[in-house]
Structures are given as C-alpha cells and as structure tokens.
Amino acid sequence: MKPKEPIDDLLKELQKLYDSDTNINHQTYYSKLALLELSGWLEDVLDEIILTYGRSKLAEPKNIEKLEKEIVKKTYGCDYKLHFREMLIQVIGITNVEKLEDTLKNMGNFQTLVDQLSSIYNARNSAAHTSIAGTMKTYQAPSSMRTYLRSLHPILEMVEIELNKI
Figure 1 (tube, one colour):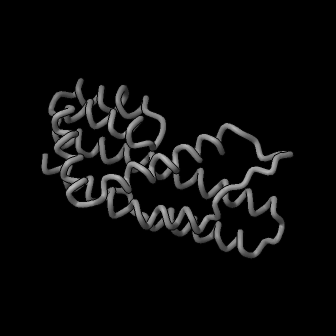
Figure 2: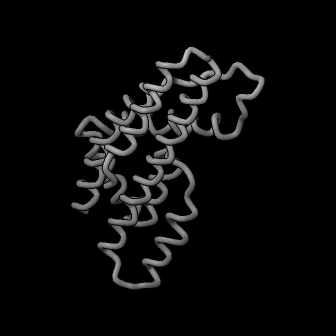
C-alpha cells in the first residue's frame, strides 16, 4: 500500500500554513486543498489495493487489462459503498466481499471505514464542485484531514491483509 508519510507531510505543511495565516480566505484555501489532497490519496490507495490484489491473482492478460481499464480506471471516488465495494465485488465476488466485511466487522473497524470514507467523499464532492469565490463556505482544518488519515491508514492496511487471505 502507498506509504502515508508523503500525504501526512503535505497535510502537516498545509496545517502550518493554515495556522500561520490570519486571512480567513487563505485558511479556507488550505483547508480545501487538504481535503482534496486526502481524498485523492485515498482514491489512489483504494485503486492500488484492488490492482495489487488483482494482478497477483489473475493470469490472463485480458482479465488484467479489464481490471486496469474497466474496473479501476473507470471508478472515480473514495466512498466505500459507491466505489471500493463495487470494485471488490467485481474482483473477488459478492460472497467474498461479505466474508471480508464480516472479518472487518469482527475486528471492529468496518463501520469506521465506511463512515469516514463516506464523510470525506461527500465533503470532497462539495469542495470540488463549488467555488469558494464570494461564498462563506467553510472546511475542516487540515489537522482534521490528518486525523482521518491516522484513523484510516491502519484500517486500510488491515483490509489489504485480509483481502490477500482470500
């Protein structure tokens, strides 16, 4: 899985900029950028989990091509239910997705994964599809994105480990 240090370093830098600037507009820019960067990183991680697993299990080049070009490349977003689960179903099947979800539920991490990915995805959509020019739109501080990162990274590592057991 992608290391978290580069995104964590970026979020730290955005937090420093946020804290050192008293201009509310600038703080909004840093917050919005932190949200967009974290959601992009999460989307990359989810794609990488699927690609790594699929490439390790598939032997037929046409199936690997389908995985890369039709399943992963055509999926845009980091929501669990809308994006990640759908890719999982296409790669491991719905019965194995249920097994994976049951395992994550038993570990106590599943609902956190679903809720946090959904929260980030919804906030990202709002941020990406609106302009802050002339509005009073607010975003969570970059430190909140670091909190999400610290929470989600170990869960995503567990997802990858458990997926590879299938």
